[in-house]
Length: 391
Image (cartoon, rainbow, N blue to C red; front, side):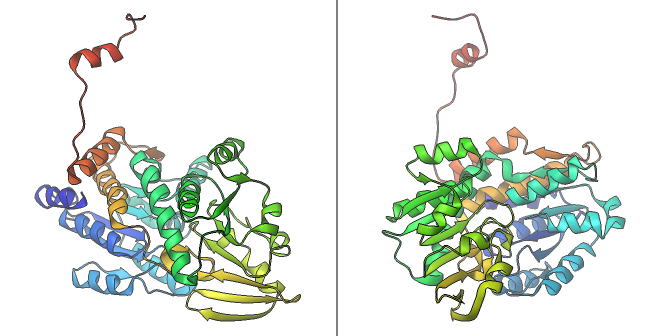
């Protein structure tokens, strides 16, 4: 699908002479988006949105295609922000963000560059939350489209992509058997839905912890156990945070976990797990596999932290399958085109993805899969738009 958009971009050049700075997970899927933007005439530069998600071979290949890419898998925090600032040195006119670190830095430390910016897009739930906070504070200085909130993004990328890739990452890191395990999923948004669905499919007993009553009720009716996290901490074998919030699993939870409990995060930032608390509790720490740190506590219990608390699906695996990222990045490409076409017409707000783009992405995806669907007849359209006909 993105290939079809890329072919059109190559002809129409919607981004001719426009500078685009992107802060995304540097993977093969992201590379295809970057190449599509370049085909559309954009002067594009890229940096990583997470220190552990970069595929180094992809970063190297993108530079061969003329797209400067500032990313190294395992980079420390100082290098991460150095790369991010190098990407901002490009003086972007459009920004593409995954987690809002780029936009946040632009608004806090690089404000002199904002005058150049036409608009931007944001990929994640976490990023959209941060941007809406920025808007509420009256400090957002240019329009941004919340790509995460498109139906063709969250219903597929968040649910099916996160579900599969999270299970994949934990499996690769540990080689555990899921059948019979008690899997505690912290947060039942669309990402939590997907993880619970896949864990249950592998034979796990799923426990959901939530703070939102409607989501908790939905989880119960979907067949999961629902309980407070402090109760779940006593019985869980595997804990997966996917809430988008800070310190979901804290010292009080760590203190009651069973020997051998596994801790993983699939939320955007590693703050969902209180890692400093775990470090302070431990009397010993050793790396026993590439992405598994064994923390020994003073009572002899062992807790296993995966991927340093970073996004486990990208730290220990390859992220979402390309077929689902295709829709997310099609949204990115078309929303950036929308921004370019509406230059100067939009207020400094967080906007939803235009409905016509959401539907276009769904139709393009169906077409790329060789699937045809029905269309309403004139009579049906008239019926749905009228109020006169009844029983």
